[in-house]
Amino acid sequence: MHRQTTAYLHLPPDADLPDLGNRPPFLAIVLAEDDVAEMWLWDAARWLVASGARYVQAWGKDAEAWTEAVDDAALEAVDYEDAPDERRVLVTSHAPDDEDIDEVFWFAKHRAAHPVLPLDAVLIVHIADAPRKEAIEAAYADA
Image (cartoon, rainbow, N blue to C red; front, side):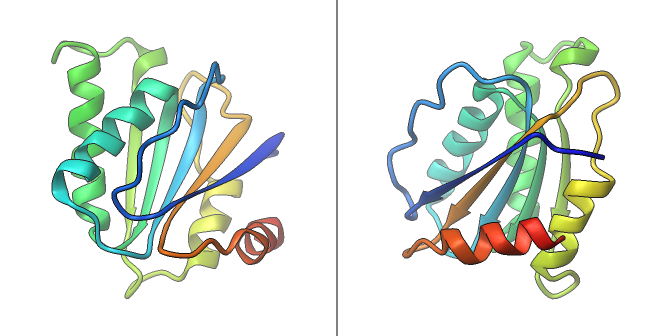
């Protein structure tokens, strides 16, 4: 599967969440390298869904908490009704003990798909004290 655009966003733990502007539906890869406050995690999940994430892969610290928060944010976004297909958000959790980041990137590029939407944009959200843009972009490009 070919992805047209990839963007990298570094967020220090508990940072203000930026306005992502008007984006097409996208696949988000959350690389959680640092611990964050639980309320911030839930706010970030709502922000991802509201910004257009329709597939979220969570890898790193609290990956399962991320998937739970994104699932709940997706339900909240449709008032806990059945989501129309184009508003459905898929979520996968990837524990660092089970999968390394290269495997997550490979899955994102070659297997992750939404049932009805093209996900031609990828947003890598790197949650860490320091950015590693070049290394992470290179690893994604090589996947």
